[in-house]
Image 1 (cartoon, one colour):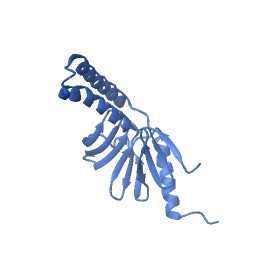
Image 2 (cartoon, helix red, strand yellow):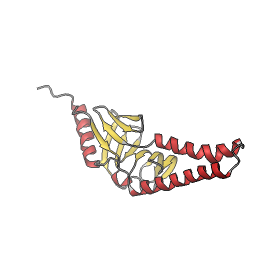
Image 3 (tube, one colour):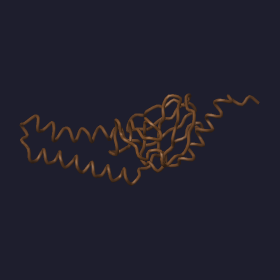
Image 4 (spheres, one colour):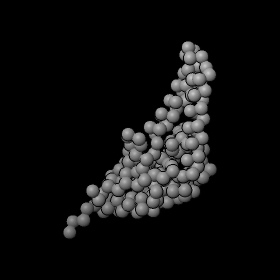
Length: 175
């Protein structure tokens, strides 16, 4: 179907490193907790075995796999589900590789399978990120919020969303 376009979400080197190190740490803690600790102590097992593995499983579910553009929505593909962004209130879309520079994570994930959640920086203010490689950032400004995504081909995504916005404002061609 030509009205639906899929964009991959490539992992940047910082995400690869953060994910690898975080996985190593979480699995090491769980393994050490299981092998070295008292298995009959519920607090020990929950905090040093279940919690690290639970963090790993939950973060995996929130992984950003790609983006799907339809005529009226942008779907952020996750593992087994998606986050839906309605395009009706989209006001501008631009490639901005510096969009996430100097950001502070206010709530979310800063590098275990994705960079996602609520962030803030001086230039954008509060914004939401669904990212895997900040160097590929696309800045979406809606009426009431700002969103950063990171598709493999930022310019192609901007062109597609711009085309859809123009078509939706003009209405269908009635020749």
